[in-house]
Amino acid sequence: MASLTLRGRGVDFPKDDEWNTPPEAWIDIKEYIPNKVIWEPFMLNNKTSTSITTLQEMGFEVLGNSTDDFFETNKGEVIVSNPPFSIKGKVIKRLYELDKPFIVILPISTLSQIQFKKYFTDKIQIIIPKRRIQFMKNEEQLKRSFFDVIYYCYKCDLPKDIIFL
Image (cartoon, rainbow, N blue to C red; front, top):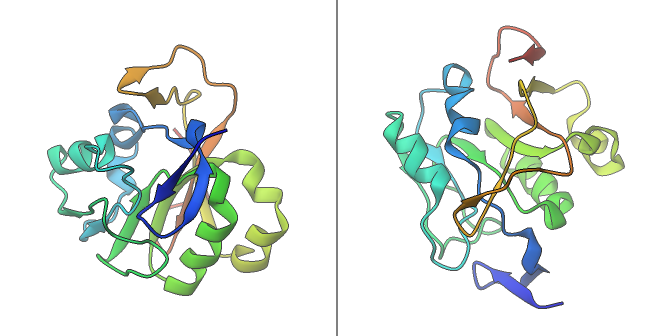
């Protein structure tokens, strides 16, 4: 299977791991996104990020470009992203190292993974979408996603630890 390189840094992941977040996924949680400078670090292959565009249209200041290396860069005050699921273990470790507020979309099964529990037990809040998020592939909305995801929130001071939309 062909692979892509994330930010030119040799972090390879399967080509099928390039999924865009539909605007409604961010619109649904607008009230929970901290009003701080957002860093959206996961843009692939110099493409326009639907996340960046949507967050900017919602009034947020957003930083992010395809030359940033998430594993060596630190921008913004809060991370809001849908990171590549195939490298989620590395992403989770880096989020822990950065120790800044974040909202990331990851599979619900991430909650039970050892690496996630190692870094974020008792420190995470979650937002459960009202329905399964249908991601976009090549700017086309998929009709059926095969997995459930949730929003993992850290240092976002949500009113409750579990929020059902």
